[in-house]
Image 1 (cartoon, rainbow, N blue to C red):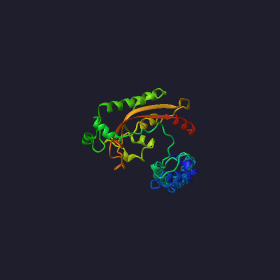
Image 2 (spheres, helix red, strand yellow):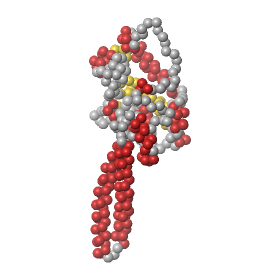
Image 3 (cartoon, one colour):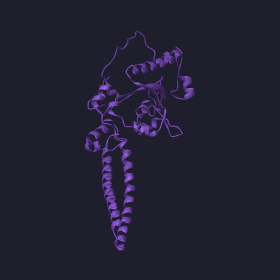
Image 4 (cartoon, helix red, strand yellow):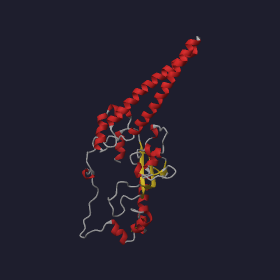
Length: 301
């Protein structure tokens, strides 16, 4: 979540981020700043009233005259009632402001190109050469079914649309790829973790998956949500703790099943095992000091 101070000082940058990320229907920065101004104005009044309340309490304790003391007590009572109403209103405005802040996107890096859709993505680099065949190649589903590696028919019978079984060598290959990824990260000094698959909602919010992607997550009857990536659990590992900079970077790698409702993907990639509701994945997280250059350096490793 962006610091409200950053938004106050850089409203144009944040407005542009909302526009470029096509989120104008999600958050109105001008309205947010209006709510923030209301909050600040009321906060100043509350703080003034609290100061007056403390002063009246001190004056009451010193006054000896009964009439004067009675008058001060009446003033203090009236002030207390006003303050109580203002504090209640302040809580409501603060809650509204905090909810709005959760929907404000991070501004993209200055070198990220703007595009209306994925078709405008720019290719940064390619690795390897595309193979060329003198015959029409089969897709992964045709090959998987012919070689008894993938069974989507029975998968759908048990789990509904996008359900599937991996069988025989495909199941072994999945495990081999996961193990290869784990070994790759261990060689680079990462700490391996198996992680909680069901997590409290506040940690989805803390890692920015809620409220944005809340409808894309499965929830349990106990109020927990199933992770769509081990990143949620890994990033929240040190939640509410203070880390010493000398102990950074903290390098973690997690392996877990991932659960995704894939809301909004109806009609996309309908053939094969794409946009599936459950899969296993290896995820890495590196906790660093707040330094963009350092973050870019680690991102490029």
